[in-house]
Structure formats: C-alpha cells, structure tokens
Image 1 (cartoon, rainbow, N blue to C red):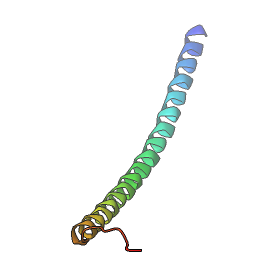
Image 2: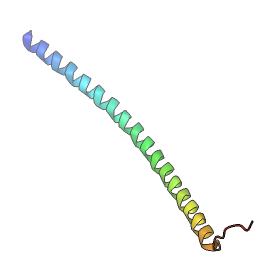
Image 3: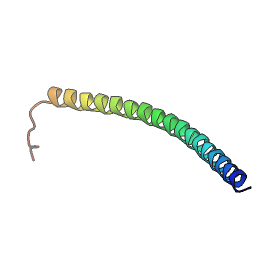
Image 4: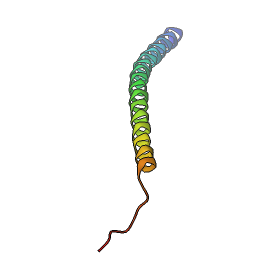
Length: 71
C-alpha cells in the first residue's frame, strides 16, 4: 500500500504543478498584452514630444532678437 500512496502523492503533486504552470501562463499572457499597450502608449508620447520640440525650435528660429521695451 505504501507504493500506491507514493504514486498517488506524486500524481497529486504533478497535477498541482500543472495547475500552477497554467495559471502562470495566463498571467504571462496578460502581462504581454499590458506590455504591448504600454509600448504603444510610449510610442505615441514620444511622437508628441518630437512634435512639441519641433514647434519650439521653429518658434525660436523665427523669433527676432529680443529687445527691452521702451518706457
């Protein structure tokens, strides 16, 4: 009977490991989706910053020399 108990305990341990691997796989799938969304958001923000920097550079280039106001 001891051998049967060992086999049963081993099977339960294997089933437990399989359940944990399945849960981790699902967690990993969710993390990948979140990571993809974050990368897309990051790309959009990067593009916005580039546009803002371009606007600032153009404004500086087109600005005339600064003068103090006459009183």
